[in-house]
Length: 172
Image (cartoon, rainbow, N blue to C red; front, side, top):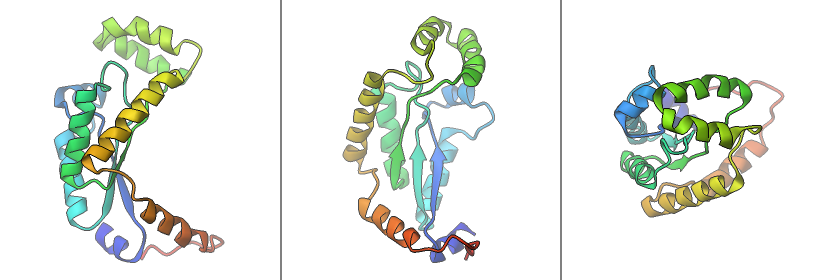
């Protein structure tokens, strides 16, 4: 069905993959498909001619943010045919922190206090961390040629800018 939609529409599919470590992925997302299965889906979508990208979000400090782990993920994304990739650092609003911090106490007790201090009174990490993460991801996207094609983005913007959104768009 996605292939048919893509023949007549601009279509992109985003897949979230935060780590290639299966055990860690099971711990972080116990009900989600394994990373290798998600990469297989990326490959299948790419082979079907569907534009597919990967979200590495959230990048979790001291858990999923190692340069080696992120590089392996970007390389795997490139090999699977991902057209683009993006990543954002973990942010913890109070409702999320109420669940995540006890999770850290249970599974990563050596990190729990550090997180409490880093996120105390704020939902986002300091700009220095996000800047460093952004630079690393930018470097890895260039290295493995997994980045947005600005010409495609411009085509999307132009095409959608002239659409009349007063009526429901047709799917096909």
